[in-house]
Image (cartoon, rainbow, N blue to C red; front, side, top):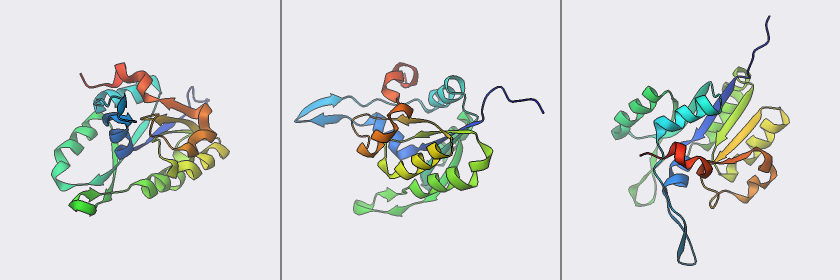
Length: 174
């Protein structure tokens, strides 16, 4: 059997962390230190597949029925969507925390299908997942949507981290 030229790479995307991490302005002592920007989701998929050689990109989302047109667009761009049911949080806002789903799908359901994983989130809740993937030799990189809001728990993974802000010119919606 011939050896593959490239490893099979899957991307696991915390959509809420990605969206808020790129779009929100960050203030420190009353001054803006980070200007939010609008991520081009179609361009982001192209970035993942062409620049980072991702074979499949899984987008983890809390399901809201009124967003069905947006979900269809994401599918057209090439994302595989994994939904979590939402509940109403404080103020009636929908809440769909996808952390458990992202961990389950990457470490169990799809674990044998990929050689390397790229994880898109600056959330420290994934520390144990990143540690597990590193120990198994499957951690390719962690794409950080916003360096100002990334968890201190990710300090153990500096060599794997890549700041999306540095590729803003490729990823920003025009």
